[in-house]
Image (tube, rainbow, N blue to C red; front, side, top):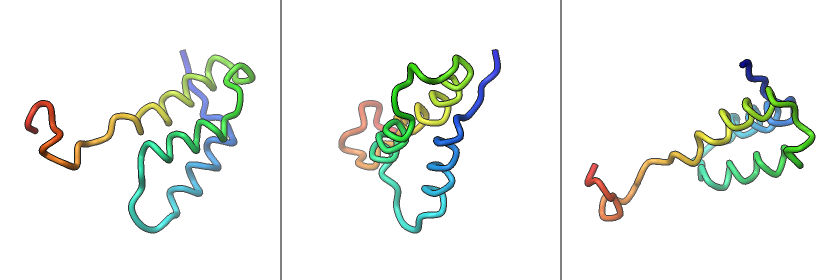
Length: 72
């Protein structure tokens, strides 16, 4: 059950990593998903790698304590 980061995704992540300033995690996730194109063209290992890289961006911290469901 290996994972493989698709080359296009790796290049987009490297480019995003070099940006200066704040990152909007959802915007970046959408950009990375768009970079991947149709997921049907990815192998099972590449789909797992893409999920591992992009999926984590959707687990964003709550920056506004008033919106926190758990008061954390």
